Length: 326
Image (cartoon, rainbow, N blue to C red):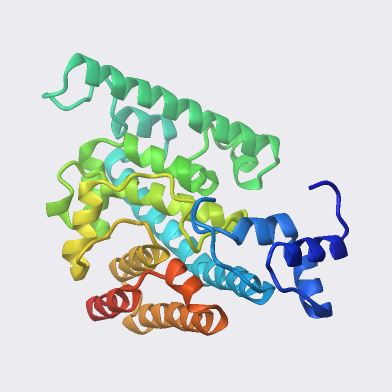
């Protein structure tokens, strides 16, 4: 296309069938950007599914819908991440009987010598490799935190009273993805304890994988929010849903299906977590209602052909089931 001024970009949009005019829409285009805004939001999930926009007003409404969803989700994501870390930390400390990272790795991380009896040699070696990868990941996180002068970490390395960083301080610097990996490396016994403490459906989780699978799922959403990525169409999702994940939400909430293919499923998952973490019914229902309000506003702002591509037709039915569960 070559370099174009903002006026040139507006003309380009008009040539391509997008009505755009006046200073307000010009400012919206400046603020959201042609590439981040128009090119980022003109399709649903992939470029083959172009949204039938005819006005810039509809594009801006879609950007605003996405922004409103991210604003709604941010605080809940932070709350869930912190709560699950604290529950996991308590269970790990109870099992290790120590705050030492090394003791944690020796006692509650799966490896070759504490693998389940039924494990083959190949599986034992895989567990040991995962343990070594985790230890490497932990050291990289500590080194990075020290290099960036993170006071929580420097305090322990620079103080003669301490010989090591405690587990709880490590948890403070772990990203959600790294935390998920740590959870996946825990022994079955510790994963079982954390799973029970949170309240997941044990019948759906024979191998106690929900604990870290759901964290990986929320990690993708959290990263999209943190980096201002597009979330309304769940293009950020990099995980394949497992039968246990699907069964858990279907059976507990009472849903006909759960597949993480729409943003509504993420609203369901977050609401499910909030209920398990004993957040009040009033607060959880207010969260769901705000999502419904945002979606209703979007419906009034775009052509029906756009809305039906963006919002799944049974969303309201699923939100009703969710509220009954809460």
